[in-house]
Picture (tube, rainbow, N blue to C red):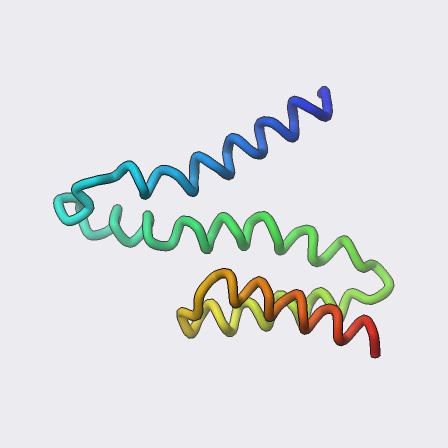
Length: 99
């Protein structure tokens, strides 16, 4: 398959997951399970994008990427902002790679 098409389809899937909650105007009228799924959608899509790459990117330093994923998971579990979770993951991974 054409690489450009794959990139475009991946971007389309990711952006549609991020934009969908913004267009659901009457969220209080949605069923409780749907509201919860929409609330968790950005976090789950981030995990689906990051986790496979984290395990395969640093083949010789797999422990650094695993520590970064663990840091992001802990902060995400404590409901810290997604941006802070990403930055913490980057910092932890970089520090472990530098040591």
